[in-house]
Image (tube, rainbow, N blue to C red; front, side):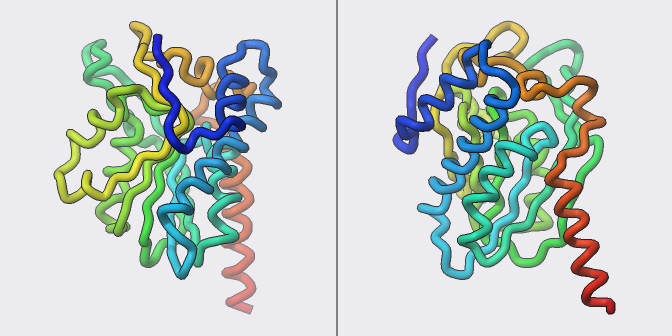
Length: 235
């Protein structure tokens, strides 16, 4: 098992990654670590995006929305002209019981109104075989037509980037920029990356029940804000 750190992995990011892996880390500490890692990923992306009049659209899965994605938004929103947000609920499945044929159909989606988008940003707590990221990119890429595509996660598997590039035509994959702090090269038979992020993120965050029924607080807050703005304009 080999872990390689990227050039954007600060000492703080490395400490936070170790906190994720530690099974003794309680859900509240795990949530805080994910939010801080998201903020650091957002700051790393700003070095590529810049801040002058740029627009971005952030896409996250439901389990990553309140913490990892929230941290990214904390870094981006004060600096960019506009940042839209979409939350996607995926259901991961293996066709014919084969991990190599995993799919992640979208069960439902919260999608904010969108205009011109310079940067499409897809964040995930960990990218193993790129199945979920691939699905969520394919869902938005044609309608948004971004100039660049930023794909970010605290941890990725060593083959994840190549796997994702292979399923898109070159004119799309040439837009990809990957941001991560650690690259791991070991996966269990069930597909879990080791040491990864210390297990299944939904469980490590302290949630019970089905992820498909979880409504992130950030979705509720942003939906209320949009409704309030519409009412203000109408009055």
